[in-house]
Amino acid sequence: MGVSCVSAAVSPPPQEPRTCRPRLTELRLSAFAGHRRAALALGAFTLFAGPSGCGKTSALRAYEALARLGGGAGVGEVFPDPAACVPERARPDAQRRRGFRIGCTADGPEGPVRLDVAVQAEPGLRIVGERLSAGGLVLLETALRDPSRPFVQAAWHTAGQAPVTRAPLPDDRLGTALLPLRVAGKTDGQRRVLAAAEQMVVALRSVFACDPRPERMREAVPVGSGRLLAGCDNLAEVLWRTRAECGQRHTRLVAAARAGCAGAVADVVGEVLGDGTVRGVLDRGDGVRTELGRLGDGELRYLALSLVLLTGPGVLEVDPAGEVPEAMQTLTVLADGLDRGLDPVQRGELAALAARMCERGHIRVVGAVSDASGVAGVPGLTVVHLEP
Image 1 (cartoon, rainbow, N blue to C red):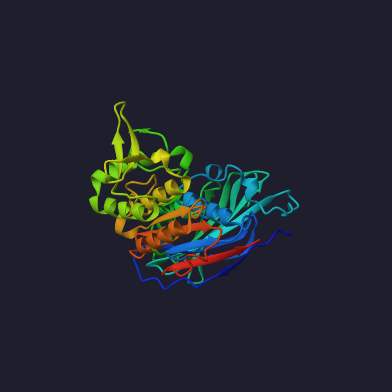
Image 2: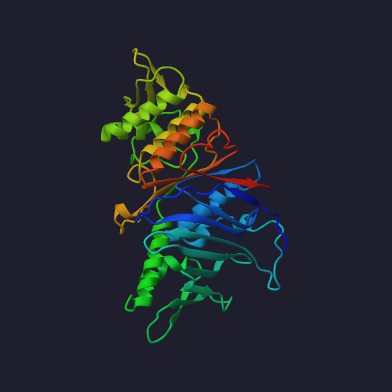
């Protein structure tokens, strides 16, 4: 079948220190939207760069989809419009089926672990194939045997009296995420399967996909959970919370605001109003307070993205793996249009902040920009240049 191709030129990812925290090191788009046979390297701080239509947003969408599948979400919830994920010129097979394929590699204590997933989009949405492998050994493999039943046939490595164990798994869930419920862990082979599956799931979980919407950040908001939404609608409420909870991070946020917002900035605060709502303001330090609603779109996006980088799963609206110690987890921020509306100074300051935060190993950033030339020299940055 013929599809439009997207090529990628990748700067080699900087060498990352060995860590016990599982993390994704490669995103594979074998056949997804406008991508064909694309392998995108992922470092601690990665930018997909290129003109409109080159596939930056679809790459981030594939990453988020894998993360949600890894968290146990159903395929229908993850792909509400599956036909949009099928390569445009993909032709149906003899059974009138069309679909797409995505995958990734997660590194960690078990070494590189690969996951590849085949999804049927038409005539019905289902996962029709999955492969989890490490060190050249297939640890889990599924295949659709009977299209009339909502199951795939799964086989996972056992290395006991029988080399593999076979059983049906539902076709609307990622099998890798279900393995802890199905594998006993009695043999060395089973324990290896469980360890690889856990590494992959932990690497995929705790993703915060954000795209700040300035038009939603200008009004006062009710006091709620204090967890930042993907569109940063409740920025004022989260500013009010974080200023009280973590003085050190708030000081860094004020420094970032001072570098990227016009005029003097002495503080960034959330003010509780008489009706119980909270509004965000910049304290200018001379008795003047500027409501966030008066700031430009670029200033609001810059401020929101800075807050995202300086906080963590306890503040962001994410679903971390509660059964895994925090020291084993990494939060990944997916930021589409990371440079949208920002001036060169704001872009440089935000990239430098992202690089500093990613150095610590507990946060990773994958963003999309139209042009990375202005920040290409930032230490620790991996740039993936996409072309139509």
